[in-house]
Image (cartoon, rainbow, N blue to C red; front, side, top):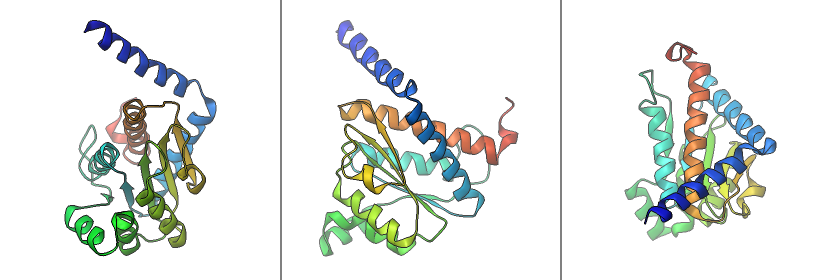
Length: 195
């Protein structure tokens, strides 16, 4: 049993090492931060979406902004698309592929930002949300894994984790989310950070 734990931790560490040693990925993370900062400084809102564990990470991202991260500060406008009543209504009337795009079309405006999470990059409901965002003039960031799938070509910024399994990809996605929040807070709420 100990070997399984150790191997899994080493595999996670290897994924992190491959990510952090890639200058192009770090540059994309910085561009993501710039876009997030610009969104909130201009009064925009963040929308997030994903399926399964990625939906949980999308919700986690939004609640860290509307609630708090490390210290108290005013809430920032963020929403994870796909509340249960909307999801069941839209799935029933239009199909599951449209649960995010329909809600985004009703809520998003120029100046907002959409972040989609997909370990494969091929989730049709996230793809449709990115197409809707483009039509609305809303910039997009895709947190992806594996080859990046279809979403890598639809996103304004695509960040592809160099891993083949969803668990390793999602572990990196949450690190990217937490780092993006800290960089954002350091810019908008510098009083919350002493260093």
